[in-house]
Length: 79
Image (cartoon, rainbow, N blue to C red; front, side, top):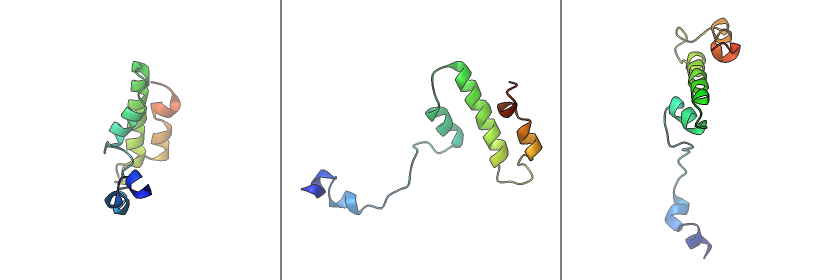
């Protein structure tokens, strides 16, 4: 039947978990999903992660200003 084909009644009644990634930390998710095997790409991903941490910091005193973010090597290309 259709229910058995979809994994049984218990599976259909189970609440979705909204878990999109196996990893929990932003850096782990980006490094895992963005891997190409090239060292240069890994370095660029690490710079991107540093940029994200700077602009997404929940503490407004630690979060970068627009000028600081615009000066980051990820945006300026000077690495």
